[in-house]
Each structure stands twice: as C-alpha cells, then as structure tokens.
Length: 410
Image (cartoon, rainbow, N blue to C red; front, side, top):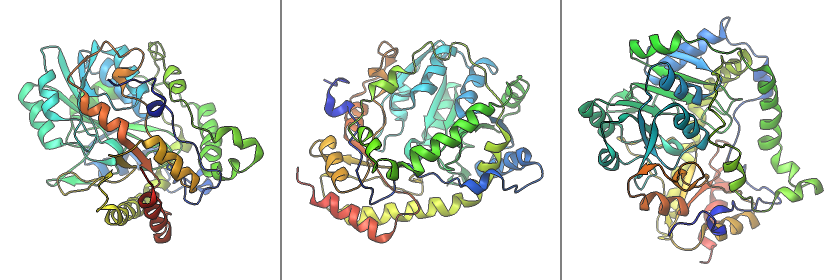
C-alpha cells in the first residue's frame, strides 16, 4: 500500500556538502541576458521564435505556463473533466481543479508519460480534455493520444513545459500535436530562464477566445525576486552549502511542506498576467543557446546509459524516433534497493539527486478524485531519482557519476 508518510518515499535526499557535479537544475540564463537586446520588439520576436520552434501559428505570451491552463478553462470553456497523470505539477493541477468540474487521473507508462489505454478507460460524457505531459522531456505517445481525442471528440492539450522546441514525431513538431500547448521559460525548464510562459495553438477558435481576454500587468516585483532566488538557489547553491550558514539546508527535506503551500484555495481567484519584458528578453537569449544545451544533455545521457546498460538495478530513460527524449531531467529508476539510500550514497560522493513530489492522488485535496488503477504510477514514482545531466557536465564527470552508481551496494 502506497503511503505518502513513509519517510523513505517522502524525504528528498540530503544535499552534498561539496558539489563535484553541477546541481540537478542548471540555469541557462546569464546576467548579461538581462540587458542584452537581441531584437527591437522583443515580445514579437519571442512570439515568432516560439511559433517556429513548436510548429504553431498563434502564441500568447504569459507570466507562467499555468495561466494558459486557466485561460483554456475560463475563456475557451474547457470547464468539464480533465484527464491527466497523477505524477505532475501540483500548482497546475490546483488551477485545473478550481476552474473545471474535476480531474480524473490516468496511469503512466514505464517512461512516466500518460498511458493512452488508461485514458480511454476513464472516458465518460463529462470528459472534455486530455492533458498530455512530456514528462522530464520524454515525448508522450502523441500519435495514440491524438487518435483517441479525435475519436471521442476531446481536446488534446500538450503540457510541453519540459519539452524543447523543434522535436518532431512523424514529421510533425511536438507542441503542435495538441489543440493547444503550454510552455514555460522557468529556471528548471528547457530554456532555464526567469519564469514566463506561453499558450500555443493552431486553432483559430482557441486563439480568438484566449487572446481577447484582458491580462493583468507584468509583475515586476516577482520578476526581480526570481532573478535573486534563481541565482542564489541554483548558481550559488554549491558555494552556499559549503558555508557554515548553509549546513542546515543540507539535510533530507520533507516534501510535504511544499505540498501544503499550494492548498486548493490558492487559485480560486486567479489573474493571468502579461509576461515581463525582461523575462521575454532572457527567454530570447536562452533560445539562442537551447539547441546546444539539448544536444549536450542528450549526449551526456547516452554516455551514461552506455555505462549503466548492464546493471539490472537501474531502469534507464530512452529516446526513440517515435518518442524522443530531450533529457530536461534524467530520471533513473532504482529497481533494487531504496532510492533514499542511493541518494545518500550520491550525496556522500558530491552528487546531488532529487525527485518530484508525491503523486497528486496521494496529496491533500486530490485523494477523492476519480482515477484508474494507479499501481504503476505509485511504483515508478517511488523508484525514480533525478540525476545531474546539464550541458556543462564533462566526460570525466559522467564517468565519475557512472562509477559512483556502479559502486553502490544494495
């Protein structure tokens, strides 16, 4: 029986006292991006770049990706039941829960993306939308999901916050398989910027509905705070944790605290905002580096996979032509032994690891939601461990990471 209160499942691994590899989240934005202007009209330039990268005609720039979900519910009328995976971002689910009639949780595949067979089992006349998350940068089965949505008259939304642009399946760009898609420019996403997001679509009716909604003004205070927090929490984290004042932050962290900070009432009143021009400027600069960053992460992941291929304790993420993986994150599945113990072993070796918060159906506010059998979701969530796979990691560091994993004794 899955128990969110089991400390071996709930606690995040301790952080290293000395980082020998970059952290799991490696920001791609630079201080110079804040004042470097790459276009006269940066907002329009960013819209055009995103449309090109994701194969769409319309782009609405927003303060964050979840604002796009709100607009789809409130402006376009997707206010009946949404089908989605339980292994996803709590704040986005809170938005959907507050502005639709409810959520239904489908199970996931071995690659942690939503299972189309499970989705079909959940379908009822109340269903209106399928949210297909490209989890950790692994493409969902968009071919099967598109066919399923068309067959049953549902709207398919791609949650592409982990998916880099210009990746195709059967000649069609990911981000354009859905009726709409959301993307994020945040520090822990492919662009690695300072927040901001967009709603993308090829459908004129969706564009007409969402683009005519009045948005709140950009949040300058939040933008400035994001610059400070992302710089200190990610770029300076290895240094801060070495200082005496940083010792208290090295211990295993309790994930329930973050869950409780997003109660269901958080987004009952919601104001989607315009993107701040500085966020757009940074996102544009990050897009110039995105291709190189994704190629480096993919190359690093393939190198690590080759070294771990014969170790049956681990399940390795894979990329295929029909289901590409951009490795925004590298989710290792710990098939044998406890991942918390492996996380501690890695921390002792100077390597950070982490995992996402517990599945939504185990969290306060979602335990009564309709759902399929989620045994696989619970099992895979309890096994997965995110490893550093940033573009700056060197071959010698990949070798060190692989040897550390191979040396672990269950």
